[in-house]
Amino acid sequence: MPLTVEEYKIGQLYMISKHSCEESDGGDGVEVVRNEQDTHPQHGVGQVTEKRIYLTSKLPIWIKTFVPQIFYVTETAWNFYPYTITEYSVFGDTPTPADSVSFLDILSDPIPEKNYKTSEDLSLWRSDKTSRGPLERGWRDNHEPIMCSYKRVWCSFEVFGFQTRTEGFVHKNIKDILLVAHRQAVAWLDEWHGLSLGEVRKYEKAMQETTNSKVKSTQNNSESHGAARPVLHRSISVTDQRSLEKMGVMTVDVTDASTLAVPRTPVRLHSVPE
Image 1 (cartoon, rainbow, N blue to C red):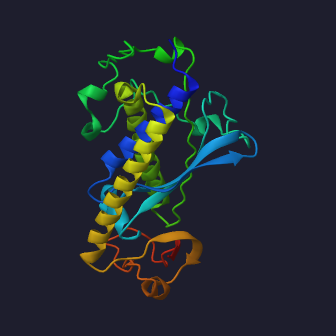
Image 2 (tube, rainbow, N blue to C red):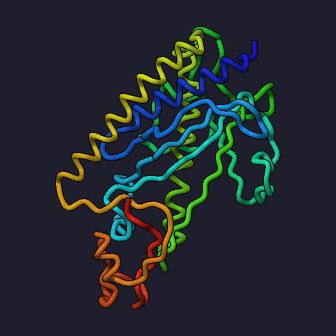
């Protein structure tokens, strides 16, 4: 028997809350800045969320010179249930080019080895409560209805010589996060199936407080162990070393070609400190 619209919603809310808390450790995590019901002018009542996805400990060595001590990506999303449009114009504006769209298969797409758990392997998983599972290859072609989740990710890092690598790094990490989380939404079915919306909202609030506390505690500890650089946001152009140093941002010695293969030009960083 297919899940109801409310059950889809409960499963999504439960997964986001638990996943965010589990992943918030060691300098990384998901801080919930906003999570509330609102009315969209086109789609009606939905849940709007704003999150900060911290990726500090995942940063490769080559990028750390150019970014703050605390590095995060902001995600803002509207959530509607169900939402099963399968066209590229789902966001209601100019259709996304087909070559810029990634389809994630929660069954067969590879995930980072550190995130693999047998209990979350959907080729082995089975729900005791609902007798669903395991999934088999081609499952998307043989199941109706299918709950779709759409994410649009923009990334711009305008430092000459590092733009493509950095933007690729951010996109890959966001893709891994989404893939793991939506595998868990299915694998945790027996944990959230049968909960009421009120019960899952209560769970969500408690987990959100725990998660935000873990993230802020980690960031405070990080800042206390050395000279903290500012959290950066928005966009202005800073093109000279003196301005960067006044902002507290570590700059690169571009006069020594043996240590960094970039042209002898000022570093361009699009940021302002909070």
